Image (tube, helix red, strand yellow):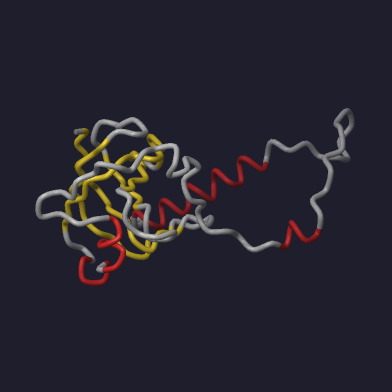
Length: 166
């Protein structure tokens, strides 16, 4: 039986291949030619997972109190090695939501702490899906260096979290 990580990479590969199948062959009768990509663009290396499209200014990150006995986003990034495979509690605001990807909901949570690169924490959950801008209490396991392929790499994330809208 395949491990979950291998199955995820395989599923993402199939999606990538199938999405490329919708292009029409330029040589087939009755089809329009598809412009070729410039050589430089085609040879560019894959980029890491983009940061949320919702800018911090779009979701106000003021008035977020640190959870009792919990950590801030910045503390989780700074203490990630010591927190690996440990359950943590975090309070923050949801800045991006991606529902039902690989059987789980994906959230980006910020609390106003941290600098660029350590101010946004990815959270996976099967809890009820919160809306962007809602304050949530997150309790889950810190996972390090998750690589799902296709540029989706996370140096630190909270996996399998219980998420409660406050």
